Amino acid sequence: EDQVTQSPEALRLQEGESSSLNCSYTVSGLRGLFWYRQDPGKGPEFLFTLYSAGEEKEKERLKATLTKKESFLHITAPKPEDSATYLCAVQARQAGTALIFGKGTTLSVSS
Amino acid sequence: DAGITQSPRHKVTETGTPVTLRCHQTENHRYMYWYRQDPGHGLRLIHYSYGVKDTDKGEVSDGYSVSRSKTEDFLLTLESATSSQTSVYFCAISEGLGQGGYTFGSGTRLTVV
Image: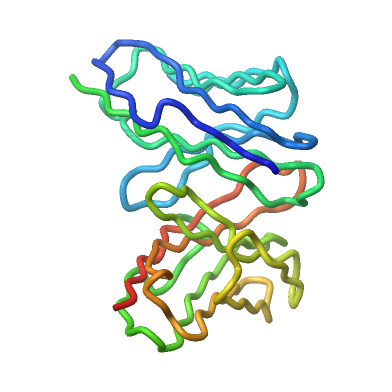
């Protein structure tokens, strides 16, 4: 069964304190791994897609990496506006375009 | 979100009544999806569409039906609402395989009392 597990469930950081979020996955044939950001009361907002092990993508203070079993979302020198829930999802080769989501990591950054 | 609109944004309905949620897109994307989001479960796929009149079931499709008569509209119907269907419902669109991530709507918060 295809599965996505995110850790930790919640993370509290001080402004400027860098850290990483983890997304481990089990899928029979990975087509792509996706990261989303979700603010309270809003729909998820697309951040990155990673397609193969070793691939990295960056956007401002965020950097996503991918291995054969997991992905990391590195947050460098976070600011309070980075506070949100970060969702990881995988797309399996045999599942068409459907995405399987993890439960998310809720990040809180205090000043 | 630009290009995708969900209606209504909030709805309270009684157990046993039918409910239809609407998703409208202006991006001419082929694929459309309905997800529900619940605490402790994350986002779970209900149904999706890969073209006009072409739909398929997702992980949690029991109690739900969908229709897509036009490229731009994807309707989700709860034939007889139950309290277990209280949730936040999100519609999403995508261009297709290898075309990047989904674009999500702002969601519909449905409460069944």
